[in-house]
Amino acid sequence: MELFESIRRQHRDEGLSIRELAERHHVHRRTVRQALINAVPPQRKAPERAASALGAHEATVRGWLEADLEVPRKQRHTARRVWQRLREEVDAEVPPCYQSLLSVKTRSCSSSQRIRLSADAASDW
Image (cartoon, rainbow, N blue to C red; front, side, top):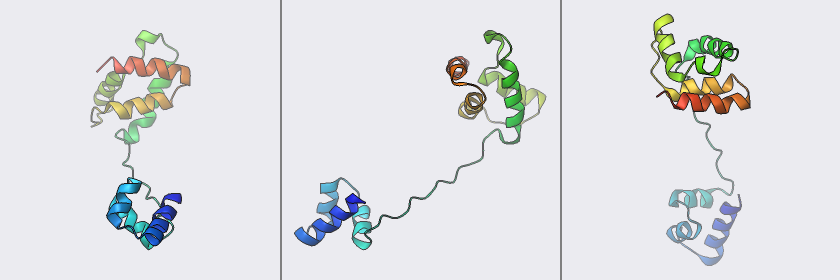
């Protein structure tokens, strides 16, 4: 908001060009044009997020990971093992996407377990 105000003020008072205003404020010339047209910046668009790669299998994976909390650390699922198990047992066509599997792992445990799980998962790829 303050940026748009200062751009409009300098254009009106000092008569600076769009290019000079863009260089002075370290913004794109498109932003300067928007500021000159309207004093209020346009609303930001919310990005359309794609569905998780796990999709319908997220509940299954979450169940496996919750059961892992009761077994010794070395016997817990890694991200790779979760992917393998999905392909073997559920016949799921899930791409080997480390980030989507790790996000399910971190959402299904407490903060102290997140650190351990992320370190375990990082070592299996």
